[in-house]
Amino acid sequence: MRPFFDLLKKIIQTGVGKSRFLMAAAGLGIAMLLILIAIQVHTNFNQLLYSTQNQNETADFLVINKKITNDMMGQADKSFFTPEDIADIKEQPFVQAFGRVTPSQFKVVIQAPGDLHFATDMFFEAVPDSFLDVKDEDWKWHVGDRTIPIILPNDFLNLYNFGFSLSQALPQISQETVRALPLQVNISNNQVSDQYMGHVVGFSDRISSFLVPASFMAWANQRYGPGVAAGTSRVIIKTPDPSNPQLVKYLEDKGYTTNQDKLKFSKTRVIVQTIVSVVGFFGLILLFFALLVFSMFIQLVIASCKQEIQLLVILGAAPAQLQRYLLKQFVPVYIVIGILSLALLATGQYWAASVLARHQMLVSAWPGIPVFAGTIVILVLVYIVNLLTVRKYVNNI
Image (cartoon, rainbow, N blue to C red; front, top):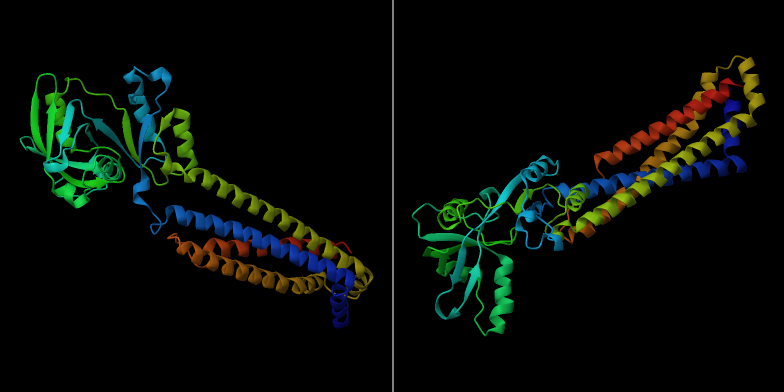
């Protein structure tokens, strides 16, 4: 029996057999590497999007309004969200929390004290406190208070410091100075005019509006407003992924708009997902051809020593013994290919993690569990295919 096994091994190592064997091994290695790369890139992408280490809190909140078109001009009611619109937004899977942006229904004029000589018409809005990125003990208001806490958008201060103040030869002011300044707030309607003091308690990067507490807005709209509740023209949502293509498509289909800068990664995400899918697809195609070449190689080996196998079977050799020997020639090759693929992927992942870390984007420095699971699945699949091939052709001799 041993001489026959030596013959089988010699056939495998002949010129024709060796070339086919190396071709199959190379195809399997490339296919496995491509599939593992696709799995790891998908894992990295999810870490960049959803990992708490990479989470950008301000990007999770979107203020949404309807797009203003020529047909809507002069018809403010068309820019309002209907109850059906609001219910539909709340039901979307990408919406974790929903809030209304309440506008002021009265005239507001703010004046800065001292030598600033700054006065401007303004408007107020209010949102639920859970949507604010400014936390301050002074962010509260009760009926009878003459001081109104205000949150300003950072963009407003930047426009003043680098636009208005420079053009008017006025001093630039810091956030600390603005917080310390007492602002004169004049609120009026056609019959009543009252004066309050404004106190800036913080600056928001999340909402580009002049915010006051919801309690003050409800009271002031009732006192100074027309007595009719204003429609909802802006809403705010919390979403786990502003670049979710499903969210972007929903806004486009409904004619809604938001800060486009927060959605800019949507196209990038689609491109990355497409590339990952293409790489994975070519990996599967190569895996298919590698399995095909392995099967053909096994057929060639069995056909080359058909007479010897028939003679051994007649003499009492068990086909199962022949099958085990043939598989023993290939299994170590599968394992070596798997280890080499993992080693190459681990090297590439370590390099990619180092490069991304320099840009404050954190991913694991080593391949994740899905990669190891994918390696095992591929090796088991190759083993099963070759086992079936060996059984089929050995038993048919």
